[in-house]
Image 1 (cartoon, rainbow, N blue to C red):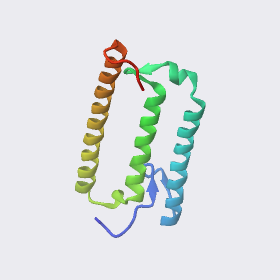
Image 2: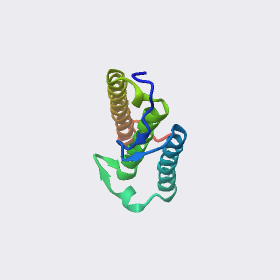
Image 3: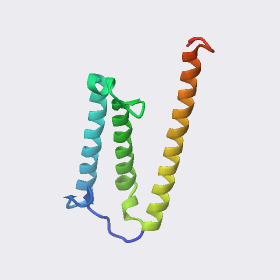
Length: 128
């Protein structure tokens, strides 16, 4: 660890806590709120988010991806104490994960589009 003290703020210092325990509860409440929003959107499926798209993907899918990345960031940053590490370690973890997540998303989108095109064009019938 870079130093022996834990930082007791979240959201870039906008919300400060008095102890580690209160900070953990604050982050847990934030993550719970984000999860509740995701579940509510998954159950309700608002028409405006399903009918509209951006970059050939429905808006609700973009919201799910963004909220999942936000949750992953706060889990890694606060619960795994990455915020207390040296800048070099922070950069190496974050840059590597950004590259791998972007690469995985690219592969999934390209392969999924290929399979959809093969099925849609009728080369293979819809058998599943």
